[in-house]
Structure formats: C-alpha cells, structure tokens
Image 1 (cartoon, rainbow, N blue to C red):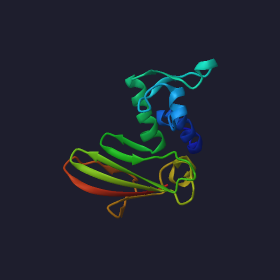
Image 2 (spheres, helix red, strand yellow):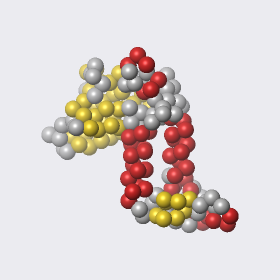
Image 3 (cartoon, rainbow, N blue to C red):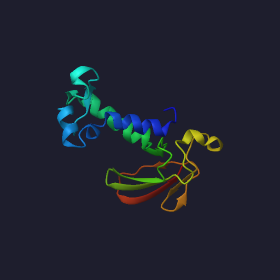
Image 4 (spheres, helix red, strand yellow):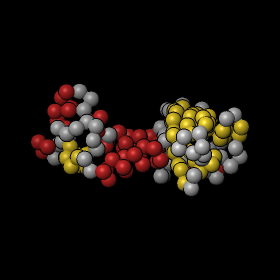
Length: 158
C-alpha cells in the first residue's frame, strides 16, 4: 500500500509456505504442510522456523489478497478491472490469466522503466501509464468486465 514493491515481495516470500520447504532440511524444520499458510512461524529457541496453526481460511484468503491485489495489482470493483501493481523494480513484465464468467482476460503488465508501483506515476495520478484492451488504448485505464464470453487481451504499462 505504501508503494514499496521490493519490500512487499520480500515480506510475501517470508510467509509463503513453499519458501520454508525448499529442501528436506528446511521441511523437517518447518514441520507443517508446504502448501498451507501457517498462522504462526515460531522464532525462539528450538522451535525457531517451525510453522503452526495451519488450515485457517483467514490466513489463506489474506495471502491471496496480498499476492493478487496488493502486489500484482489486480483490482476488481463493481465489474470494473483495474491494474495497480506494487512489484519489485527488477520485474520487467508479468502475466495474469483471469476468468470472469465465460470470458477470459489475458493480462500482460510491462515495467520497462523499473518502477515499484503506480505511486511513482505522478503525471497519471497514481494510475498506470498505458492501458490497452485488444490493442485499443483506454484513456480511463480500466475495463468493464463481461461474463458473456470472449477472450480479451489487456496490455498495461506501469
């Protein structure tokens, strides 16, 4: 939310369970499922690095929100799709495939100038620089979603 994309990914990785089970030694220390968000990761004594309180839906849903909305920037409100990323400067591009009803949205976000977030776009009031739908630039930098079917190509320049 502050626009610190490098820090956002660092913190996301800290709570991502797969990061705690990259090898057998790490998995034995973590002691919980590497595919479930742990509400706690102990930090003291012989329990340091061990996960706890797994299988809580609140933890998983907040991880989803943190990744999709706050880092990748996929914002959907009242059937309007916007992209407002907060990513590491080193990310030059990424893609999201999003299904809405019977429609598919292929979203490509380009970051040619190594920005962390839309907060750096003073001249666009904190919006992305460019927003294209099927090759047509959208000045409002958003698209109304349709459930009716079809494939939509969205290209965004941070």
